[in-house]
Image (tube, one colour):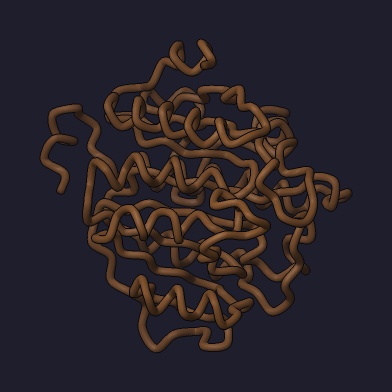
Length: 288
């Protein structure tokens, strides 16, 4: 049991950025555990600024706080540690932005919000559906988080965007759980889904075509452009109570182009969370 997770100072009715240096659940390549430090260096190193495309300046914003990195063991206990910390954020009415790490972090992060909001909607950007029942013998593999969520929280709505690596098992899982999928072969869709809040957003960086994001462990050609993703995000108007940005692998990103994209997404998603979630604790109680 880590004492560090108990001392995190969550901003009430604010947004907190939490690094999750974890990659023990990766099925192919390690390296994503280094991502939070790399992204934070870009954000804080003077190469950029903290203003979003909409003009919101995060630097010094009274409702925005960098919470640092959560100490995690490279084993199944990490799932419990992340879940405990996320539930503390929910209790503090803090919209938590997780900075991974591999995609295994999404299950405990989003589960905390699904417990609070049974009809939570998940907006998931990914080349892969991550719906395996088990992968490599592990129920917590980064290929499994959405199966774990949907089997535990049956009222949650899952909308997946950018998927282009389905297999038979995962299609069966998607049908079993009633997943709404916008595959890349059907892009652009005739109409985008209408979201009802609260909303949780999960962005796996391999949703982007490798031309834009080579620094991931699983290259899957034919993906989104950053602009397509940003345009969809900027159309969101419901409360975004939680989010994560995952699967940056710095060892495959020598030019830093993928890290730069990850840093931009951190700013844009944080700005979206600040502008859509209530600014007063008592207003959080009215969210349904």
